[in-house]
Structures are given as C-alpha cells and as structure tokens.
Image 1 (cartoon, rainbow, N blue to C red):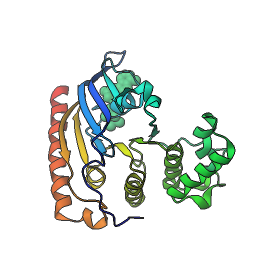
Image 2: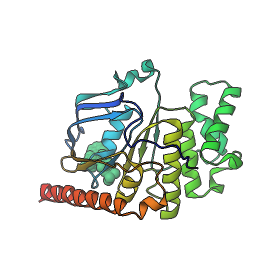
Image 3: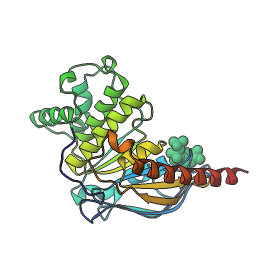
Length: 274
Ligand SMILES: Nc1ncnc2c1ncn2[C@@H]1O[C@H](COP(=O)(O)OP(=O)(O)OP(=O)(O)O)[C@@H](O)[C@H]1O
C-alpha cells in the first residue's frame, strides 16, 4: 500500500490543527489528571502521546475531542473552540481501543452508522461506506457480521467507521493495543498509508515505544501523578517507513531515546507515589 512519493517528516502545511492552551483537568473526585498542558499540532502532523499508565493520555485526547471539558485553559481546533469545529469546515473522528461494533448489524451497517445519524441520504452514504471499506481492505466483508471477523478486522471496521465521515483529524486511543504483534504492525503500516493518502492530522495514544517511533512525526512524553507533558521528540526519519526502518540503527536510536525518557517519566511517577 505504500507509495513512492516522499513525505516530509514535517507537517504538510504550517496551519495549527490543534492548540491546547494551558488546558488542565481535575476530575470531580479531586484527581489531578493533568497539569496545564500547552501543545500545538500542525495540520498533517502525526503526533503520539506516550507515557506510563495514568499520566493523562486519554484525558488529553478526550479534551481534544470535546468529550471532556478542561477545568481551566482552553482548546482550539483550526483556531475555533472545539465545540465550534463545524464552523471551520473541518471534521474529527475518534477511534477507541475496543471496536464497539453493533453485533447484530453487518459490517456495512456498522460503518454507515455515523452517516445515518447525520442524515446523509442513502446513495451518497452507500458510496462513502464502500470507499471507507476499500481504504481498510474490507470490501469483501461488507455484508459479514462482526463475529465472523478477527480482532484485527474488527478494528479495521472501527477505523472505517471513523473514516466514513471524511475526517481531517483522527484521534486514536490505543487502537491496536489488544491485537497480536503481527496484526498490529500491519495495521500500523496501513494507518500510515491512510494518513499520507488522506492528509490526516492524527493524535495517537499508545504504550508502545516501537509503535510510537514507527508512526510519528513527534512523540509527546507524559508523566503521571499529576499527569503532565515532560518531553517531546521529533522522529525525523522519512516516510514511507517500512519494515526495514524497524531494524535500522536509526530506529534503535530513537527507541533508546524514548525508552530512557519513559524510564525518567516513570521514575517521576514513582517518586510522586512515594
Ligand atoms: N472519570 C474519572 N474520574 C476520576 N479520575 C479519573 C477519571 N478518568 C481518569 N481518571 C484518573 O485520571 C488520571 C489520568 O487518567 P487517564 O485515563 O487519562 O490516563 P492514561 O495515561 O490514559 O492511562 P492508561 O495508560 O492507563 O490508559 C488517572 O489517575 C486516572 O485514574
């Protein structure tokens, strides 16, 4: 699925897609999930949030999605408040760790759901469902029920359901965390193809250093208790990134940098607990 066209490791255009402006989050029970975070993500960037459990990765992603309000500070998408994203003519989609498919409905009905909810008429929704299924390589399974599919294929359905709305911003919370390693690598590679083809802006949450190096333009390292951003790394390797990249000295160098940073972030977390 890879194309030969060179893709810069820098974003496609210098337009901020996401601006997190001193946004912080304390849950009603008093848990300080995030100290103020400042983060700008350019249009077309692939940014990964990495860090020990409980450092606020999901909280930050949900605030970007508008699913959670910051306690203080604010967030903007294409320079508009998250709730007014539509005014910018841009769209976002959220892909969760679990595919959360309707078990009684076919693959195509599952993928069509966001379009049905938005009242998109049938001929147009049919075409868009077909395109989304083709993008994730599931055209042949349009009429199958989810239980007939493997975990990796179900995750593809979930990604197709995100893509069917033709989003500009794709938010992914550990989407491949529950999959075996081979399936995960395949989906990572396919995701990079989609990102390049559709010029998406992606924020991706993972616990995997290798996945972060393979996918990202930039990795944001976070520490816990309280959750905060501690370091950032630019992964300046060119795209397309192939299996060869994963066994290159360059890859190992980035993986070591991230591993050391993750150890520091985890030590900070342990100290906070002591
Ligand atoms: N609804 C909630 N109410 C209270 N505390 C919460 C809530 N959701 C998350 N937390 C707490 O906020 C902190 C950050 O949680 P969050 O899920 O954002 O971290 P994370 O980095 O995504 O963790 P993980 O890697 O384990 O998924 C944790 O201490 C968590 O227990």
